[in-house]
Image (cartoon, rainbow, N blue to C red):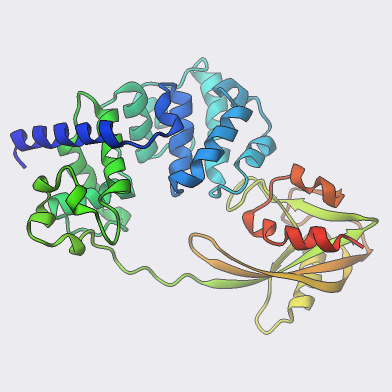
Amino acid sequence: MNQQQIRKFRKRLIGWYRENRRDLPWRKTNDPYCIWISEVMLQQTRVETVVPYYQRFLQCFPDLPSLARSDLEAVLKAWEGLGYYARARNLHRAAGIVIAEHQGVVPQDPDLFGKLPGVGVYIRAAVTSIAFDKPLPAVDGNVKRVLARLMKIGEPVNRSSFHRSFTAAAQQLLDRRQPGTYNQAMMELGALICMPGQPDCPRCPVRSFCSAFKENGVDRYPVRLRSEPVPEYRIAVGVVCRNNRVLITRRKNEGLLGGLWEFPGGKIGPREDPEAACIREIKEEVNLHVEVMAHLSRVKHAYTHFKIVMDVYRCRYLGGRVKLSGPVDYRWIRLEEIDRFAFPKANHKFFPMLRKVGCR
């Protein structure tokens, strides 16, 4: 597209956006804190899922100081079920840094904002363009798909090494006078019209500018490289019962599911019996001797890069004192207290059965 076509493209796209954009709560505010929260939550998560979490999170932490002074465990509890918990941990850390080093004001300078924990290239561009009108292109999966079809970009969208090609294309089209509105319009176009699989080309406001549409080749874009199959792991977990209480342990703050509570257990070894693995893992992880009373549930759950099949057993405490190897904290709790703690979604899948059978 030449410059005249680019100007027409921007005008038509933004006009369509203003008429057709979804009524989302973060679009009703100019508060950079609220916009920041929404963009972090929207990473790798569907809008429909995010809306109630966003509203509840802001009820718990209505401003940056309230988030900064809150305990991490409270933050993780508010985030519980949304996944990718490093996002919540980084937000909490970043809020503390903004209070300590930026007088409690979210930095407008993209370079300063970009130094905060969890603020990558996309978050940096999205938040500073929407909240502060900084002329940076926000390139997420929706935008990559639109650009691939619009400009017939043949580089694969699912390889980070080719991200620069999409950023360059986005920079070329960016409306520098209203970058936040433009970025949101591009993302909205990808979400509502230029969708994966079957894009709604007849309703597309910018189809006359789309190279793939003109050549009847929309189905050939975007290009995606085939991903490797994800591994599946067998896990054995024990609900250890003692005096009408159960043992829960808290993971280290770093890494997958960091800071969340769970029941002790771990991977089942090759050709190892699941019950035996449960007993072994509990001894290795928390130094307790237990016996398996019953199989409680089998849970299947998928993470980004792997899947698990988790066998959950109700166990009786036989002896020993808790000594941690891996977890950083533990509690003996009554089952009615379980909702006070933040657990991974996989654990929630067997909570109904656990409540039903109790800890006899």
